[in-house]
Image 1: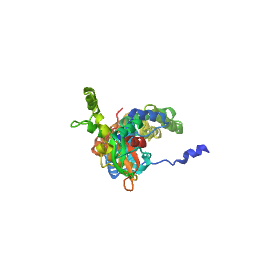
Image 2 (image 1 turned 135 degrees about the horizontal axis):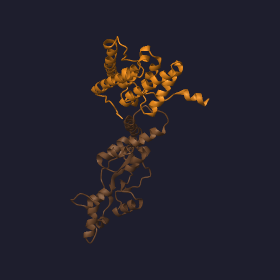
Image 3 (image 1 turned 30 degrees about the horizontal axis):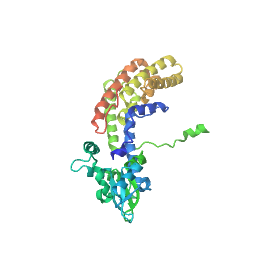
Image 4 (image 1 turned 90 degrees about the vertical axis):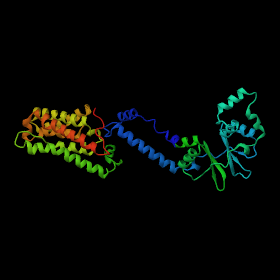
Length: 195
Length: 178
């Protein structure tokens, strides 16, 4: 939730005083009282909007996806070309099977230690090869996260945000009617929609 | 016609306060007016001294009823009343042969001066006007009017406001001193 509420609080006491100077006439409220009202009203409005706007109104509809049997090489190429950090994974019948993202790659590149990009770079620099070279033989299904966390189209944006925070994910596929993929929402979509 | 359309209003009015606010306003006002009224009616009733004037009722509305208003802050209460009292007495002394003019001049000048000194306090207008309207007792006070009833009265009411308003859990007074 904190990411969505970051839009608010750039306003300062000085902003308010300047605004009061610009508006002609005596405004019978102290700047600090105005700030108090503003913050409460803004939070109220954000909650209202977050409940009114639905997932299917802010999702990206043309979804770039891969299949369970797609090679990791092809999956990586796709992510690189489109400059995205994750993809939904589909079964042959177009229903959602899982999600593959940078996190999954990092997890499999660092065996027991905490997944970290820098650790991977370190390994690459210290060894004569890179650990990801072995991945060429694998397919998406081998390292994807499954079953996927998903949201439905009619879900309010507030719930989508909570879901992302709860499971600590950066993108969530939107499904309708028996796991059919209809769109995807990334964190940036949430922020763009609200601010 | 654009001029008359300015009178249309139509904007959102503020909401009602809750019961707690109403009760604390009552308590504050009662305890604030009591000392100045008591001084006036019981302690000094025979003298030429006046300890209570109508504008104190108006101040009570602000400092006990609308404690967050910028108009109710100590600077406004004290500054507004004292400045307006001076203006009122000056206006009476200069223009008493023309009471209508003295009245208008007193109120208008008091407002302008309060605006200029950031001490706008609606009861100040009344304090200025009372200096002109009188009673004769008030006229007789001359500039002493600024000290008694005005100066002492607002100090007593301010003290009560500081004590009583801050007893209320939902209240904090003042918002600012300067």
